[in-house]
Length: 148
Image (cartoon, rainbow, N blue to C red):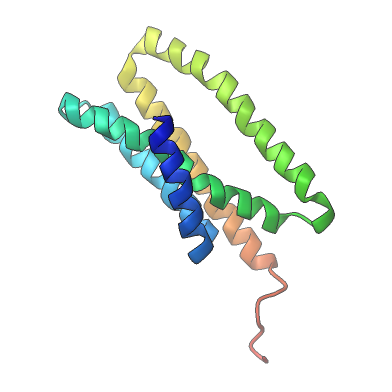
């Protein structure tokens, strides 16, 4: 998973440099939601499920460069480092809290529910990203006006 993830980070950086970071972020989290729901359904054969898990893990990796670019864009020049640090701390905290929580869910309710929970959290991330993009677009002072 680490090797596949490293490849997807490079791919995400390449795509982010050539397109809108918002779209890369939305694609990564959207793919995570869909793949997690497919895995939760239990409707795929085991070998395909194993391949999907590799891709599932990499959906987050492909969006990492976009997330960094969006953090930079949303920061004042003097706050880029601080905001990147806060973003990283938040992600690390989720990485520390998530496994025990999902392990508990698996023990109590099964793997399927854990994957549905991942899908739901990814859907929330997509909704938040869309909301942030909408607010950002409404407050963007660099957009050309109709008189230009």
